[in-house]
Image (cartoon, rainbow, N blue to C red):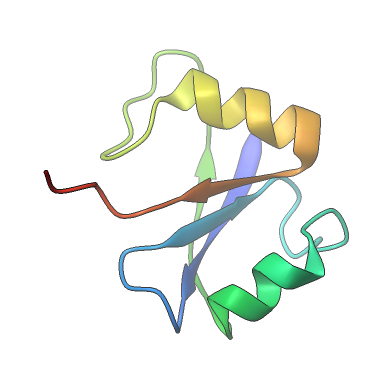
Length: 78
């Protein structure tokens, strides 16, 4: 599965993964406003077993298929 990753201009360490490049049609407008302008960071091929720095690849793939996007938030500090 191919995805494109965008970085939020308003929220530090927050990334939006999209399944088909720049198709923002399935991303809620309220979320897009919250994230501000988005900067394209990279394109990835999400294959089973691929390692991602801060996300589980199977969870990302499942959300991309079901809702069309995956939102990666900064890690929580306790």
